[in-house]
Length: 463
Image (cartoon, rainbow, N blue to C red):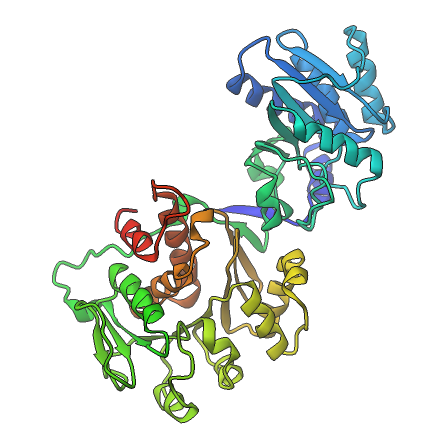
């Protein structure tokens, strides 16, 4: 798990004050970090174009050009000149080596975007947009210095944004690199140190990036265990039976000792799942909403929910008249997709917005909801899943586009429900269920359009 930061200028200032470094020393280390990455990935004498802005991000690029000059075919494009003191210094150092800025070439093996860093706070002007558009046309491998030009700190994209294969971000991870929109442009993300190890540079953060190593499977260690040891998930099976079957199958595969679908009528279900018309006495958690429809009247649902079991809520329950009351319960996990979350925000009186507005402000509205409902754990689905509880937030970036298929969300609800049933707390259930869901999608080896919910469930067994 790594820290994420809304901004890092305060971390830079703290590093200067506490460790007696200077901006120039930090810049040299940033350039050295990028040089090492390039040396590790590209053979000597590769052609490298570095496009530099007039501020300190451009200065990073100029310093990189100086460090690479002897071993690579380096060309520098400096469309706006050098304005900041450090950019001017780095420019003068580079020209002492006999390297002068050039126009854009027709092509190159590697393109380094050092136009604008994470401090960009305005839309790109017309000339900058044209430059970025030209760079995106190059066939070469594309590297962004700190953050792709056109990607703003809040994670939104400009009209034209540099599309990197690799982003080398400086000092620490920026939260804006992990918006849904950013996933289209950042590529692989690595961090370059700035003269001190990240453990010295960073301070505690409320936002975190989940890593593959954070996954802890519900492996069984009790030799004398029986099925009751691992809980009993009661899953309300409504109008769309298939959604409940998918969620129930996922829960059974992820360790729930027993899974019962609660239905009004007898329905055809897999043999390894059970069926009942009432809540089993041994229930330890409830899953509600997936495929619910209008099968149950309010009175029937109220009777099912006269208890304090932990719950995972999804899909149709978010538009149900009972939802506002459910939000007052402790130990609940909500798993909406963006459109469902806009409905939740309206019901809660937090905001009346459309999906596009939400997607441009995902971080903000997650924080707003979790502040308003501190008992709930929110799992906002998307290209990069956001998990929030009270004032602590986690981003899961590991999912793939293969998950863009009906039924994938039902699998996620089943995984979380399985962990709740086994006694995990809601936040742990949300984090571990989401990680397992995302990493299982990576293991699917066939064409990414072909993943089915049951392929995903099968992949869960081999994590």
